[in-house]
Image 1 (cartoon, rainbow over the protein chains, first blue to last red):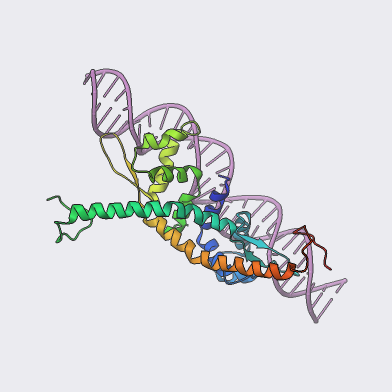
Image 2: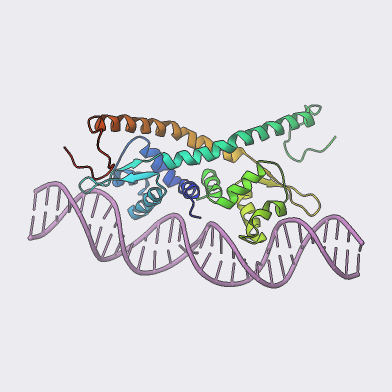
Length: 122
Length: 122
DNA sequence: TATATACTTTACTAAATGGTTAATTAACCA
DNA sequence: TGGTTAATTAACCATTTAGTAAAGTATATA
């Protein structure tokens, strides 16, 4: 699993990393400041590792300023992931629509039925 | 890592699984037919496992018809993932724009410079 | 120079992931 | 009944992932 899209989705598949990205969408910050909200749940090296995952996915970049490593967002790989999803979102919403139409057809004379599952026929 | 969004992104973080979803966006099919394009690269049980990952993420559902298990797409969790991404896409495209403006400011009197890195000042 | 701050690296562990082969279940068909 | 097709389950293995504690590096500051 080494293709860029997989690496991006994999990086996004963790709540800590998504929270780090959310924080970074407000602007550049240091590792310590990024880590602060998580230090009750995990250690600083754990956050460093998460940042490394994001960095390898190309979602963030680190620079150097004295002893700090300011991190900033790099949205490009993110855009590729959105593009992949949008490509199918359309199709899938259509298929949802088709399902909707189908359900409407099937249920149009069953207006008093409440349960979504286990509905008996006729 | 057990929250729905993480499970969804994790399910998408594999090229085989994305290809399975792509195939399913054309319509319902059996496991054997879904597996066919991958049987040079991996075994049928491997595909079954991938389908199980997609199923646990709620991205597909399986029904039964004789000895076949037709699979179909279930786009709902996928939409949640798109929604999360869209939420930040806007912000991040804005930040790209800001970076673009900034770079334009910085480089407007350096039109003959070629290297992006290691550029000497003045 | 010594100490504090900001981080990273190393070495280790437990659990999850992605694959295998072989056996098993389930339905259909002759 | 016996055989074929469709798919899953079981048992196993190697690799990756996510965390830890402790040591190390680099910069600033007193």
